[in-house]
Image 1 (cartoon, rainbow, N blue to C red):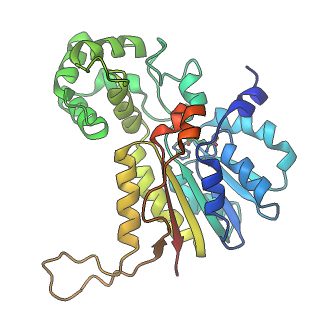
Image 2 (image 1 turned 120 degrees about the vertical axis):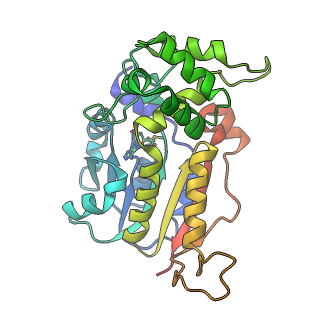
Length: 312
Ligand SMILES: C[S@@+](CC[C@H](N)C(=O)[O-])C[C@H]1O[C@@H](n2cnc3c(N)ncnc32)[C@H](O)[C@@H]1O
């Protein structure tokens, strides 16, 4: 498939809900902190013809593909390779001062999962990698082959909620070196029991955990939420799509904390924290994709959409 086809067949998750969420956002740039193949950004550019998008992605392959395809929007899109956790520095370097909306569509894209050589998938057999930014940082291979058994078990348990974390970590240490996704998946299959009815592959949780550890995803989410909230102008909208309960919990807790005036412990009789709410939660009940969308795009099934508005 060539780049234009990949981008044309890419289906952004909950697109109409995401676009609507920005409808009454104030003027200023949109930041798409997880630009990917730009599916959501394209929608933003078309729906809001007077606005501009600052796109950030760690993955140079994705931004490279997108740069070619987004040429027709060249005066309205600024794309950079970087980490959304650094969005304050990145916007400063780009001389962007007014930000009316921010989107984070977390995790990995279908093209990253499916492209050979990225080492994200257990459906093919390839060298373990899993880095969004392939020019730096530790790979999944490094983690699997050099971390101590205890550290591996902690990663699998904490980032994958895998009950068999210890058993799997032990087996990995016995069978090292483990070069490929296929070999790792086989080891996990041998240690994890799943009901015959389960639609989830036994290695799913371990691969999720590894990907989170390799890319320091949870640190980035916390830093990105914090930086984004600082950057947004009054009434600016922050819109986040998550795909599993662990990342959704981080987003939910961050937004909840920033929406209340006091974060003192319940045992403290008089507030001493001086915490002030900085946002209003727009959708108290998290939004999920329609049945129709899940049918067309099964990968959207676990998506959760959270929307907040900055209030200072
Ligand atoms: C689910 S995809 C986004 C898809 C995009 N909304 C679209 O419509 O094409 C997530 C993207 O976020 C990128 N990413 C993950 N963590 C990141 C981070 N900390 N900073 C910047 N980009 C990141 C990944 O490389 C991937 O391209």
